[in-house]
Image (cartoon, rainbow, N blue to C red; front, side):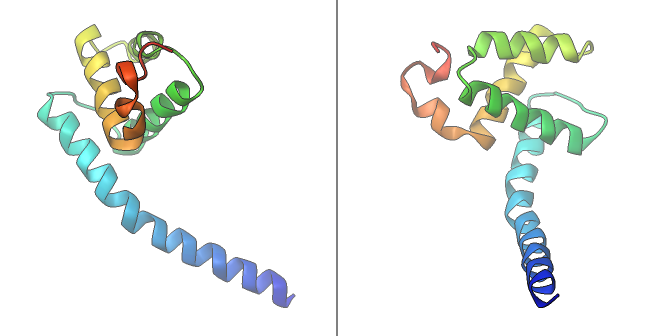
Length: 107
């Protein structure tokens, strides 16, 4: 029982600490979307989609394929905005990809 309480306490502390870090990254990401003129109905879903973008790129998918999927799954998003969304997502959540030769687009 004591172990269970300890694990629950640790999980609660991590859960409380993580949003403080995530908020600044999330806020910067959402602000960058706004500056690019990209609108979204739900900030949480936009953030989730951005993290999905990075997961796909980190798995080795070509950036152009990720952009195509982003546009296909978001019918209101133009090709230009899908590309901008993907770039903004990468800059916010997986900046190491941008530092690679070719910006990760030649995978």
